[in-house]
Image (tube, rainbow, N blue to C red; front, top):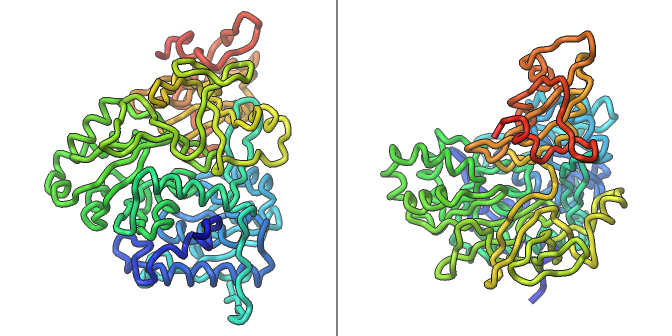
Length: 511
């Protein structure tokens, strides 16, 4: 049996007439239709001069076309999806850092990414969608908006196993966001790991409520399903008010989400008991942030289905560990057992610890990135003896279940959205009244962590908290804007004179 190592090969798994992609109020797209859509799109990209190794950014709303455009671009180029909520400066950074060869947007799009792309001389390709067509179907037009004729006798130039399929950025606290390149082999390995962990078959259907510019939605929901010939119901994005209507329309066997989404769903569960009863879920998956044991118990009682908590990160093409399905043990508070890559605990000297020892979580396997782009310093820090250092602290119990005990990195985890404090620092420092700033995490009951900032104003200036928050709102996506800005005469420092982000919330009385 041939090992599937490319997106193109992976899409061959489904029965031609079986549903691959569906969406609210849209006809479904079959696997045969999906394969034709992907092949034709790669041919169009090739005709326009884009191919293997070329980064093509995608700025589209969540939904079926975001899913299929990701697959199509990744099958022949380097897919680089970006958050549509980004502001001009953010698009400018990411498009320039990626050295994007093209940008794909909807024909009707007014995204600021378009003007940014023009300023960087990046061609803008338009994606035409007709809501009467099967979900995920589109026509990709050239920079001038015209049709791109393709030669049916010239086959698409599909990517090979070692080619980069996807590039996402991950944020660091002491450096600019880092590019994480994930190969075709990385993504297909991760999809295989997830589908095996969840025992997915062609009979399954995933209700996707995760954003498709994020590794969780792209791989855990979409790619793992298609890898076994299963289908994905692609919503416009999470909406607690519409979740149960989608559940009733899609009849899924599972969904995956971050804890804050699960909590919002639970608040509306009582008034939707009939829908829950007629739509039996095989399981529910949770990842991207720690799931409180109380929420896990309430989800299981509400939906009468096991909740599978998993542990993932971009550099691992998402999944690293997962609690197994019944009848195997699921341990509340644990992110489960190794579920794809090898998982170990390493001490400060690079030695692997026995069970019970607390240290840094490290991984290695076919789904793990080979290293950050053009960042030798970050790579030397991230890899030790072939192990990738996650930056998370934890311990393995005697049965191999992983417990996370803290985060070595200072990235703020706001309900699964990762925010670089330094990025927020740099925005606030652009304000004429701000002389000093440190952004940090403060506890939040639902999100786990929220963004806060401590600011020292320049002599002879004045500014109010609301003014500084509004300043950030004009330059940052909403989830990165500090919800609390403290204006101080001095920011507390550690024993060595350095400002310490970790523990600052407690020092400032925000816990």
